[in-house]
Each structure stands twice: as C-alpha cells, then as structure tokens.
Length: 292
Image (cartoon, rainbow, N blue to C red; front, side, top):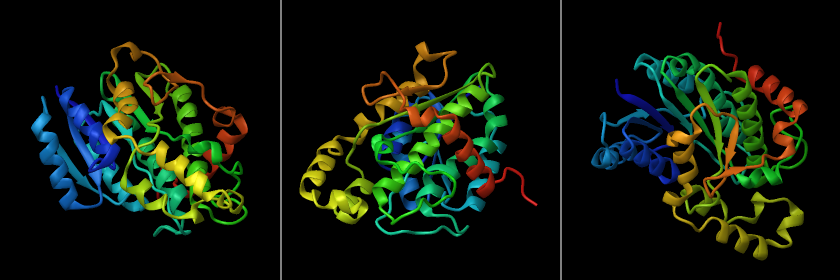
C-alpha cells in the first residue's frame, strides 16, 4: 500500500521543497495551497522526482475554518495518512481578521493547523505508523506571552504576533505528542531556521512588524533578519524532511528538531502547563471539533 503524505502551503518555498523530498523518498504527496495555477506547477515539479504514487494538489484557503474542515474530509476520504506536515504560516504587516472573525496571524499559524490535525487523527492512526510534523520558528523568542485571548493586549506588531502564534502551536505540539504516545502516531516540531521566501521578503521591508523599541534599531534589526532569512528553501526544508522520514526516530515523539537537523532544547514557555492550558482553551473555543 502506498504511503501518503500531506504538506500544507506546499506549492512554494519550504513547503514545496519538503514535498519534493517526500516524493523522492517514496511518498504519494498531496500539496495544499490556495492558488490552482501554483498548485499545478508544483505537482508537475513533484511528479518529475516522485518514486511512488502520483502527486495531487488540494485547493484550500487555510485561513478559513470551513475550508479547513472540508479539506480534512477530502484527505480522510483518500485513506490512511502516513505523514502530515503542517507547514502553513503567515505574517502580516497590518492587523487582519479571517472570515471567521479570528485574528489572522493566530488563525493561520495555529488554529487552522490545530483543527486540521485533530480532524485527521483517525486517518493518521489508520496508517501502520505515522508522523505529524509541525513547522516551528525561532520567532517564538519575540512572542507575547498572554494566551487568555486570541489577540494579546497592546498594539499590533506582526513579528511578535507571529512568534506568539508559533509559540502556541509549539506548546500544542508537545501536548499532542504526550497525548498520542503509544498510539503509533509520532509528533515532532521542526525549526527550519531562516529562508528566503515570499513571506520574509515582503514583511522584512517594513519596520512596523516590530515594536517601537526595536524600530529605533531598525537598520541593525533588518540586517540581522536579512542574514537569518537568506538561505535557500531547500536547506530550510531539511528539518521537516528529517523528522518525516528518518528511520532512527521510529518510536520517538515530542522532539524539536533544529535547523541543523538535530534535537534542540525547547523553550520553557513552550512546555509550560499554564501556556498549554490556555492555548488548548483558545483552540477549542474558536475551532470546536464538532459543529452544530
């Protein structure tokens, strides 16, 4: 039976490189994206290196919980799933809300992949062994720490809010790993480090993505960001590919793999019981697993 893998935001950047690596490793890959033209181009590239089943494009806007639910249903109908890579991510220069009324940074980087993962757990359990890979970010160091509401207090600064959403998803990742321990479903976080992607190219141009204190040092901050995000996407995809395919990780779970494809020590906040409780409460509030 063919091994199926799904990569969200898989039509470009790190996601596409991850999909290419999985296809070359013998997985039948489905890439998820919003744009059908980019999807078709991605499938063509993936097919050229695939060693197993034909690649597939699944169109979905993951800022919408309705489309996320519909995507989960389509993916589940296709049969057991061996690998789910939650690669989708977004950073916004200005505050935005989704069609569901959720602050967009938190919705795209945490709520949507949380919902997709939860809805696909039975599909993942149906595979002989399966892995969930949640792509993380070092931006969690700049995260606001409050999770008693979707939007933290204070002004909107894209980089800090992005880090906060990534911190929420990392805390969920470690919680899920413990929850699924012994079920045959392993859960990992992968930090790609920096890469030159459309998102980083767009957002790094604007000092408004950081708090006023950092704006005073913007020339220095920007140069630091640019150096950190100058690497190729293929290199940044290595941690995701490692945790998705590495045989030595069989039976292991709950690891954070860094840019060097080695285990890294998670931040204390990402394993804080209080953070986990608050993140789960927010997740269940905004994305209930059953609808009426």
